[in-house]
Length: 294
Image (cartoon, rainbow, N blue to C red; front, side):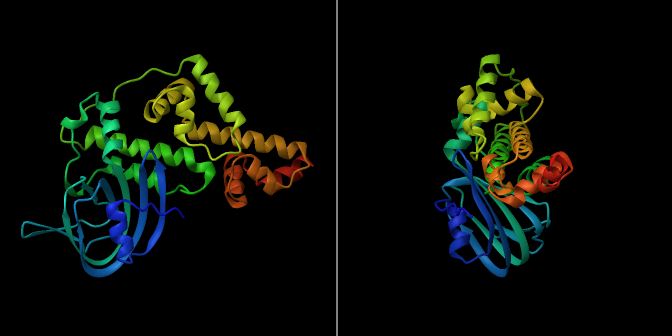
């Protein structure tokens, strides 16, 4: 598990001994952590050096935000909090909570403001909000972030794309400038799409990231993800996963390689992850598929 030290909120909870279930870097300076708290305490995040988005995945009914002598109670699971960089916040913690944190450096947020709003980053700031309800934002976290294996090489594109999506959403819909529709973008030029496809085929054994593919196309990760889907009808992660499975099928049909080596050759970091993804795509485990072709 990658521990993303250097993020003030993460370091605060780590030093306090809060149990850490998972953590990882999401690319472009972004990072996430999943915490389990079960205690009675006061927590202060003192002028953090990054923005923080938090979701109470489960529990949290006993948490209160302390501000100006007023204690605002949490609404429990599903509550979202936005904590802008540089803002000191105080919290009263009581009872159990499973807490998802997403950490965003100022510079990364500023780039998303330019990309999503065509605005001057100096004129746009993340709102300070406690116990916000946002079904769309919660849905992104629960469906596109929490189910992923954050450290699994084969899921790195999905992880980095989820980070891009969350940051773009915050810039567009949770900033002081106010909501504005994301700009429509065209698809990839045919030559750029061909370069990306050739790159994927040549590098399938690697834990590719969204930034890797975007660099080949000469675009920012955010614009690349949108342009790629417009051109192909598929997300970059889904496309790369399909190519991994296609290569795995070809290698199994050719014979001669143990399944563990097939998994590594196709960019899967573990046999179990390979088996799960292969079965989702084909309805068979790799071993069953090999027997059918034997």
